[in-house]
Length: 86
Image (tube, rainbow, N blue to C red; front, side, top):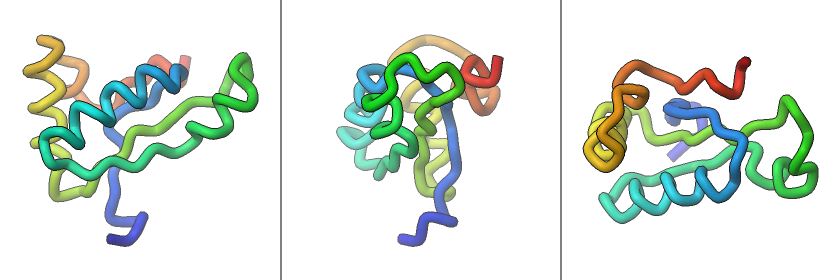
């Protein structure tokens, strides 16, 4: 699968949190690609550095559904988590 076929469903600062979401999605058969995870580990207090949680575009709605059911929240249904943009 090509990288351009992936969509970002969340932006996070924490590598631990990103890996937790990745594990949940992969357990449900959804491939996950993390961008920026190495940079946040090297520079953990980098400020504007965040991790993008990406999934194949055809799995986007299912990924949001899986995370919403696990965490009982609407942030996954509403689009990209913009906390990292603030």
